Length: 453
Image (tube, rainbow, N blue to C red; front, side, top):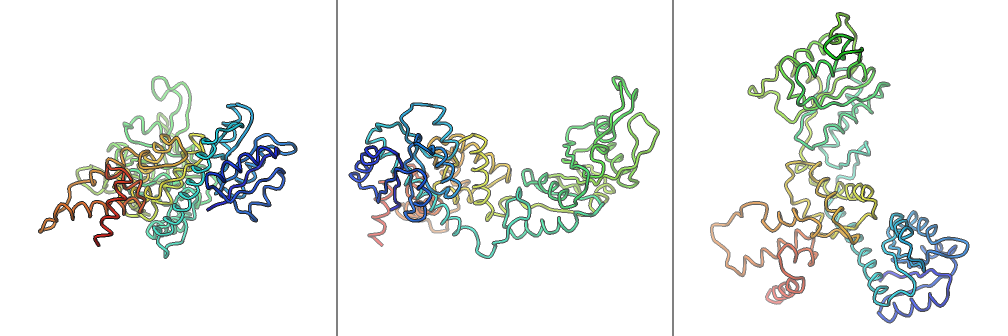
């Protein structure tokens, strides 16, 4: 069992808390009155939990908290103080404390807080072990872009190709389903190109021809009613850089012709002007549609012009090995947005998320996790924080396929339990939730099956 380090300048407080925890079978326990010696104990004693007084002479508990979290973020820290100050509590929790107790602490409250902290510590270890099992050993390569999380071979090859073609002045076409990260890919191309100008992104879906022309090329004074001055367009704004046109498949035929002329000649006119301007902007276009489908009405000559370099992004279900890393990233991102400590995840969550279908791809996974972290109230993500995920797992995600010879009821029950345990990563609590039974009931069923085998 992990050790428990208690830090307080008052000897009586140290002895009282140590006695309470030891009487409940928790330990080993080390006490320390000097807050400046805490870091020494991190290696020598290697605590799993630190109970930390917030107000100590010479060095505050908040200083110790921040130092420990920086050196050993895996250690759970429970802050104890004599002041019922909500602002201090919030500050400590934001700094990474797992709990906050008042002095003259209730015996049951102290024991519960420590047991819970040790449980979170164990869960984090399970998560790390699970990730090592889930992620393929042969795919240790990492993305060269910190905002694109992947170890999938196809994605890594795409990123290598992007770095190769980034200096090109020819158009680039990004193809992929909704939520696959086309805008992030455009950003990667732009950064790899090292162009001096900015990256300017616009979603052209819903633009009629006049709106598209004005947005892209700009206008001169008097070009139309309300044009009281000259305004540069997106091409001018992205001068020397990259213009990203998202949802290019939704462009009207008239707008497609204007874009084709720009790509062919590199020249354009502002709305209401006869003066030709020269563009030095690289165009990246993206769509989730099949531009070669004749029913879409997309001009073939424009398609060929845009297809100097084509990048086809895989769906999330084509890169399942990325789901654990993406899950951890989105949990961290969500915790920062909600201004709460990053919660640990029950070991079964990774397997459950890997089993899902994602029509919305990475964006859908992100939404699922942000909602779950928003629901999470105890620094631990469980199936209960994923109502839509739980519903999916209970329904099996679709119709069951039965073999020619049906299993009997006993065999069916055993198969269902086995599948729930697989999806929950052998976590009985998570598997019991999926089956709609209690953990003791599941444990009894497993023991019965084991004895019969």
